[in-house]
Every structure is written in C-alpha cells, then in structure tokens.
Image 1 (tube, rainbow, N blue to C red):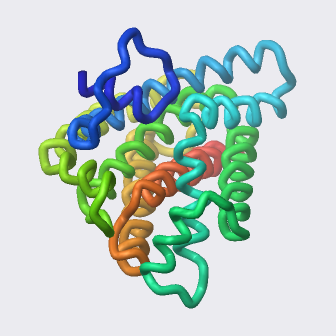
Image 2: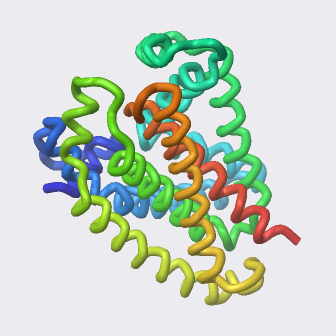
Length: 261
C-alpha cells in the first residue's frame, strides 16, 4: 500500500484503487519515492524508444521532457517555480518568502528557473547517445526522488500544517529503506553501464558514474535544503519539488557530459 500511495502522490498514473492520502501515511510512504523514480525512468525510456521510431532525433528530447512533466502532473515544476520566487527574491524576511511560496502567481525568478531546467533537460537528452537514454532516465529520476526523500527526512517544515504532518511521517526507517533501495538500483546501474552497447558510449567505469550521479543528487538536495532552512526556516513541499527537478536536470547534464565525444 505504501508504494501505491507514493505512485498516487508523485504521478498521475491510474491505479485500480486510489489509496488513502492522509499526510502521515504519505510521509511514511516516502521510502518508496526512489522506486517511483525507477518506474518513471522506465516509462520515459519507453517513451523515448517510441518517439525515436517515429520522429527525428532532435524531436525525441522535447517529447521525453514533456512526457516527464505530464507523468508527474507538473507537480515538481510548480514547486520549482514557487521556490525560485521565494528563495531568490532579495531583501525579504522568512515570513515574506513563505507568503510568496503560497502565491499562485509565477514571478520572474520562477519563469527563469522553469525555462532553465526544461532547457537543460532537453539539451542534455538531445546531446547524449541514444544508447544512453534508458540508463540516464532511470538514474536521474531515481536519484532525484531519493534526494527529495533526503530533504524531507533531514530538514524541518517551516510552519505547522499539512507539510509538518507529512514531515512527521518521515524518519530514519523511511530514509534508510529508501537509501537501500537506491543503493540496489545504483549497483544495477553500474553493472548496466558496463554492458554493450553502453561501453561504447560511457567514459570511465560504470559504477563510478552511477555513484557519482547519486552524490550529485545528494549535493543538490543538501544545498537547497540549507538555503531553504536559512531563508524560509525549513523546507516546504515546493522546496522538495525544486530539489527533485534540479537533481534530475543536473543528472541528465552529467550523463550528457560523460558520454560526449
């Protein structure tokens, strides 16, 4: 049931039965966030394969990026835009920044963040070999959801309410369980990167790249979490969404850089 809750919360994928969505149960289901990332990565790989059979290579990248946004209902992109407006607006108090996060309007920083992340994703996918697509989508999506779990577990919610109730359900069992699942996926990714045809695309050891991307996601989550703690008093749901989007975009960029000739 926890996995179904996580899928229902993080995606728009249809489920036979919609699981109860109370905040505490959702928090406890956060251990499954990396597995939802794995599922999304597989679906994006399938979408890329289907698009590649019908469209020129340059059109595959935007199709995959749009597919990722659709599959998640734009949830994390919305958080990215709100977080950019709240965290980057100069001369604001924490209370004023939190008020900006609640405002449904998207400001200048939010627009710039959205354009930058979507553009980075699109160009990264377009720049990497087709053989690396499946690997890259699985790695980026999995690590990004693990990074989101990390900020949930390690940084407090800044105020009482739904976010704090959600956060109360996230503890050491969720972080450890999600990290062990991510470790298993990272080991599989390291083996996968060492198998043909990826050996012709990837530079260096597959395990080094797999665990390097995991470390990159951890760094993104830690830096954004610390920034939110300083400027907001804690990490909100929007900040967790921003962590996911930034980790995913930079992960794809890193794969593109590693496979570039």
